Each structure stands twice: as structure tokens, then as C-alpha cells.
Image (cartoon, rainbow over all chains, first blue to last red; front, side, top):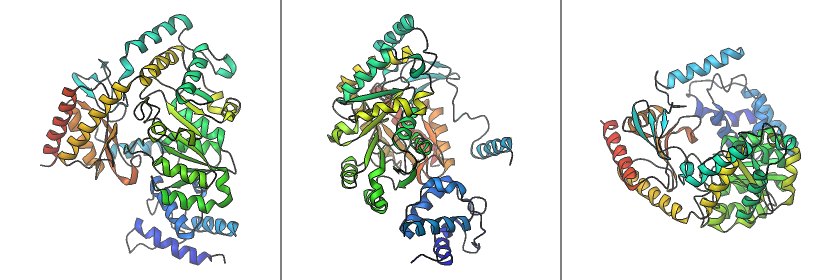
Length: 84
Length: 395
């Protein structure tokens, strides 16, 4: 069964927490690069964590269109649906 | 943000990290004395960061071959091989490299960077997958991007991770190119080739091994990791460079797959670049002979490697996981790395400074590359300088 948007968002928040203090709120609109200061190398390592968390393959080429948490959740959801 | 604003942001980031007046990247070298010594400003310095593993940049045979080639064929080819033709030297070097590896085919490229760009983008395309080690060189990343294939990374030298990612791909692993390196340029560690080969066979994938840092360094005749492990027949494509052990510039791909030759017609980094100059080809051919017969040079190189690795370990430096001609000292912060780099330069030693995001896992590195022609006195001098700087930095 496909994960819901909110389920993916919640699991993703857990992985994003490493880039920020506990008081910072991570929402769907949070900008990964400008607000969480995730540089290119950190993003690539985050993607490997996401692949393991959701048991999917995320091509790093697909990250060109990802700026916000919302866009990352959508990408994960698309890949999970395509795999089914 | 405008185009030029982006460059201003780069300048600001660089200024924040590095002090004014210190040319860390692109150091002006005023005179070259030999394979291992040069003049910077008013100081004589020892090269310990130049990848000149066999010290062949001043080999008389290579210099003479280059001189003769300029005399007989001129300074350049002024165009690509597709347009301007393949000189005798281009064809001869390809034949000699194929013979060196006992392989069916070889293509020579203008730089090592282009060898990876051309080979990867020629082999893989949209709809395919490239599965690359997380510590891969930029030329591998860029080749993958140029290919249009889906790029998946596995954790550096982690075979369980590679297996997991191949399994996830399912049937797509059959159209997957796995890419690893003989010796990794950042930490100097080797790829676990036997396990990679096992996985690539189990998943029916294709394997490309980049021997840029291991050519001339590993194996009895210097073929690289494929020779050290006896697995040359299991690796589908081998790329490498002329700019390290061979002391020139250029790159190659060898393979027993006859399809390699088709890259000459589809691979843009091969087609749309001027071919290597006659002097480059001639010096590389001479260097390849020296490399092939260079058992003594390799023995000297490894003696120097073991001495420096052991000296630095005893001094308490944190190092890459195994002795290799690339010896990386790992520092906790860019400031510490910069201080070590500056301290060594002030003591007459030039090494490489590698800062995030170029260094793996957020670390900062001061990277040494050892040469066969570093003398025992020079290696002792290096050990003393590292000791002196460590003492100053720990105060």
C-alpha cells in the first residue's frame, strides 16, 4: 500500500532533524538548502538514508527539481507509486 | 540571484574560509628543479602533493621522446581525431596500452577527466543506471550526469550497501554500470574488488574500474588493482590517466568488449576535443615502457609510503585506512587543516589542502602523495617537518 503524504513527511522529518536544532519547526514549506543549510554533499548522504528508510532507489539526477521538504516528499511518493 | 551575484557569493565563501594573501589553491610555482623540488617565492620546496608516483616527469627517455615528436610532428594536432585523423603515435599508444593490459581494445583521450566523461557517457544512457561509490572522483560524477542515466550512490567501499542497492534495482541491475576506483584519491584506500566482482556477476551488471591512482603503483607490472588482485578478466572496462604515474596528460579506456571502439562515434568528449599532442603521446609511450619495467621504482615507492605512513602514525596524526601513495591526514576542522598546510609550507613542503565539501564526510584533509624518487633524506625531512608542525599546533 502506498504511503500517505503525511506518513512520508513524518518519517522524513526524523531524518532532517540531524540538520537543525530541536526547536526549529520543519514543515512542508521548509527550504532544504536555505533554511536547513543542507549542502550538496549532505544532500547526497541524506538521499542514501531516504533510500534505506523507504526501500526505494532515488536517482540523484531527480534532485535538481527539489528545493523544499514538500518537493522531496512528492518525489519519494512518486517513486514508491511507480514501483508498485 | 544574477549570474555574477553567484560568483560574488563564491568569492565571499572563499574569503570566509581562507585568509587573504594565501594562495592555497593554484599556488604560484616559480621554478621547477626536478620531479620533487621547486621554487616558490624565494624558497626551495619539496613536492609532496603532485601524484608523480614514479617520478617520471623528468625521465630523460620521456623528455627526449617529447622533443623528437615536436621536431617531427609539430606542437599540436589542431583538432579532433574524427576530423583531423589519428597520428601514428595515437594508434601506437592505443596498441601498446591494449597489449599492456592484454585487452582487445583501447581508446586514448585528451585528459583523464575526459576518459571518464567519454567512457561513462558512451556506455550508459537514459533509462540505464550507474551505481557509483560515494567517494567517486568528480570526473565520474560528471560522466554520469552527461550520460543521462539514473545515478545511484552506494556507501564508500561498503559491499553490503552495494548489494542492497543492486537488489533494489531488480531486473534493472542488468542495465547497470557499477563504477569503482583502484585507489580512492581522497583517503588512499583501495576498492574491495573481489567482492565488487562477485556482486556484479551475481546481478549481471557491467563493471568499470578507474585505475587513475593505482596505475604504476599496484601489481607486478603496474597495471593497477586488477593485477594485484588477479581480476583483470572480471573487469569490463578500465579507465586511467597519463597525468599521474606516467607524468604527462591524457587518459585511456581499455576493454575486452569489442564494442568499446564504437565510443569513437558516439562519445562527445572524444569527438569534440582536440586529440593529444605529439609530444604528450611520445612522452607517455616512453613512460609506459618505464612503468612496465618499473619494479624497482615501485619497490622504492612502497618503501617511502610505509616510512611516511608509519612516521605520521607514530606522531599521532589521524590517517586514511591503509598505507598507499595517497596518504591523507584527517583534521577535524578547515582551520586545523589550513594551519597544518601552512606550517608544512613554511617548513619547505608543499602538500594538498582539501576542504569541505570536497573532502568526504565533512572532514578536512591535508593530503600527501609519495613518489618513488623521493630520497631517504627527503622522507626523513618530511617526517621531521610533520613533527615540528604538530608540536607548534598542539600548543
